[in-house]
Image (cartoon, rainbow, N blue to C red):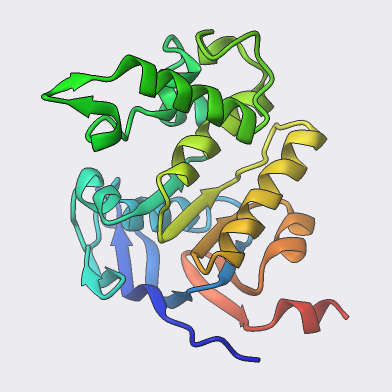
Length: 243
């Protein structure tokens, strides 16, 4: 049966030029709906990173518009866009994904310090934070001595699970997953992919950018192929294509 699908992200005629005026993203339009993993395939350097930066508030938009759940977010700040429940698993987990010298718990709650659950009269509720950290370590199968170790001391797969824990536990409506399993061991890759499938099954909208063709074919419901900043193919039903 067809569930009623709601549009979560709409990218409309988005063009991005760099400082030299060279077009990096050329009149790109697509939508992501609830309960859908939309994959973006194509060799890296074909506009994918400019597209992600435009959606997440990390880069500018030269023309066109981007909306999240019907609200225009073109050119909005990272903070504003995050507050509208956009989760982002960034490509480079060490520079933009985690604060390596902070503990696992400090990393997974870094975006949740405003939650009533963790503060009272402006003070942090340490016990509540610790039990949350413990829960995250368990739920996301982060292999570590305990939640207090510096996240940077863990293996790549466990650091990435920490990033995934932070981004998914805030119950986002849309998740941008950029190369979520790159450089990650097989066990962690499987786990992370399953988390994305779970999010889809909870009716979230997911954008998956990966240079791993098997990953995109295995996970995506629909698929965009990018080349030289343009969308050169759109496949609305990946399952039927694979048959």
